Amino acid sequence: MKTIKLSSFTIETIEEACSDFQYKEDELINVLHRCQQKLGYLPAEVQEIIAQKLNMSVAKVYGVVSFYSFFSMTPHGKHPISICMGTACYVRGAEKLVDEFKRQLRIDVGETTKDGDFSLSCLRCVGACGLAPIVMVGDKVYGRVSVKQVKDIISEYQKGIN
Image (cartoon, rainbow, N blue to C red; front, side, top):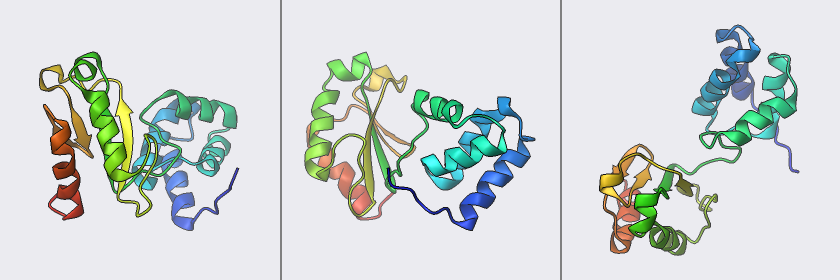
């Protein structure tokens, strides 16, 4: 596994998050949320320092990071695209949307484009079944998305409209 050298900003971010939550083991999820919010993702090296600061095993930190789908161990694109795969969305064609995003962006689910602009993921359920199928780009929700709209959604972000 390739290791990365952590910047002073990263180390300061981890230290600040742990300090803000009094280095308490039961605040692990809050520390992870804070670190991911500021760093974008939680690579193994970040998890190791958090484990050390909170006086717990790296395995426990990794277990939490890998269990919750919100946490990511890989960097996301500037515009993370998430497609809902809940029952209503799936029945209304979400799988075809995934295939079209994969084709147009030339990446697979869980990957980021080479330029770092887009990443692609699937969600379990957004909770807006009446708008199925749903695509989210960052915090923006697109409802009743068709395969024909995929190119336009990508173009919005390539042109800097959003």
